Length: 328
Image 1 (cartoon, rainbow, N blue to C red):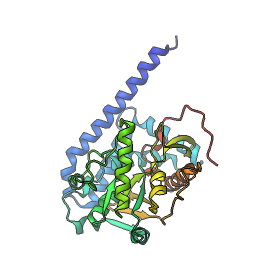
Image 2: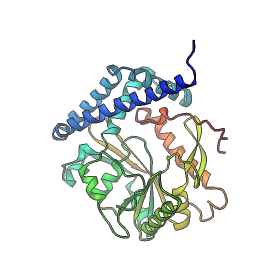
Image 3: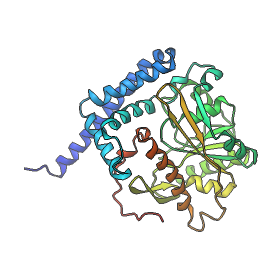
Image 4: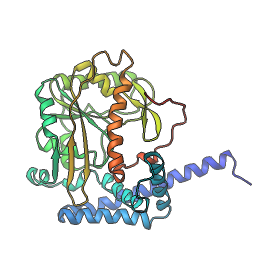
């Protein structure tokens, strides 16, 4: 006899609980190993993290099927040219890198940490900063997504993060979050549970940062519900995404600089800044916010096509249940 609705719900909750347990165990293992990994040569640390991905894929019950399904979905949405045999294991390793955040860089001097980065397009960032209008650094959840922030703090750029407070990050990054005052970081973190009044206050604080000529990092691939959202197509499905970064760019005139970062598998990081662009002041009023949201997501999708092992959890996102049309 097939399971009823209540049975299916219990099975679903059980699967989610098991997934959280396995992710929690992996995070605990990383926390225990991190002091040793930080003292090891960078190439050895990268090899150990890659090995943890292998264990996660091969030996943890149920994980292999999860990663294989994610790769099958990637093949459906990106085309049949993906190397399915190796990609699932590489994706498992990529997720361990993702969960390690920037903690491997803790305890290093600025010089030591900065030597771990290969940077392309820095002139794009510096050109945008030189316009004295503030800069929106358009981030994402691809690859080593917190490493651009770490690099910029080490390089003394006037950076603030407009996002939920990152957890399990380096002590170095945590120390950067303690700035207070009108232009400080502490009150700039946002929450999905914010009231409309709190959300409006967050927007005003973000505008203050940009008007002061500082850099505001905000992710362009945040699925959201309610106000300030627009539909956009991403990796085979259409979701609602936050348009906050578009609104801020339109209201302040700040140039937008997309940024990407990924580990190279040998303990170094490939950091890339793309050419800046502007959002017209009337874009949100004219219903064009969705065009810019789509532009940002297309750049992320391009990175995923080239480096699918760094897609993190994109291919495990639930498919949308609402009927959204693809953005033209």
